[in-house]
Figure 1 (cartoon, each protein chain N blue to C red):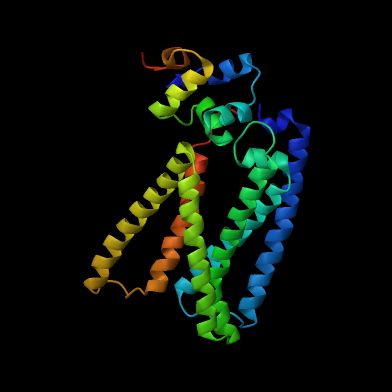
Figure 2: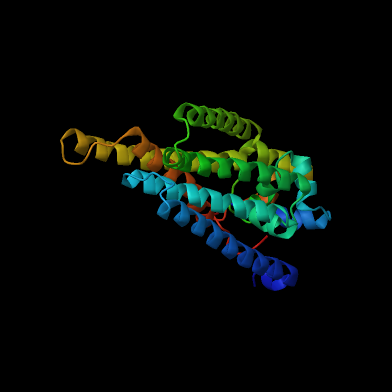
Length: 213
Length: 65
């Protein structure tokens, strides 16, 4: 029997989350399509479309994390602990949500900025600030994590490295032989970030216990 | 590796948070060990044994043996 079946309040919180997330997904998708159809997004190649999609996934995931951080029952389920999450755990999840959101913005920003005619230097400065902040955050996470959390982080990183280097070995060889089009660093970045964003969620799903603690 | 962490914790009426605090790890780690999703390192396993005041082999059992 699932935890939600045992706890009607948790089941209710899950239903409320589903409805809220559906509205949020619809609003965000509508916003992105409006930006695209109104010509405010500069899309010239497949990597631009992929960047918008990965960026949207990040913004959606960040919204879900933020929502769950305000419901301690859902938070407990999210971080896989017995009972409810604590305010301290909620604060940590909110910081994670912020960086996931900013990553989504980072991926969409070049296309949007180009479409809206924003000064590239200023946009790039904002992106560099994000990269610096993200690096500090990731290093701090790694330093303060305990052995289980660190292993999860390293496992995600290892799979990302394996998948991306395999892809690069195959594509790089084919590119040098003139079999495939030349890829830009933007193309590579989008693919790497897409894999880096999606890999941990697959690993977490794979590691789900058969029954709750 | 099977373990009796949940049973030992229940016997002492400790929450996952209580045990996590004693072990200086996160609640996620305690939950992952209890549900068999994670086997702790040797130093952490010894610490768990110390916290419960029990020999390590009475807490962790190799399910193949």
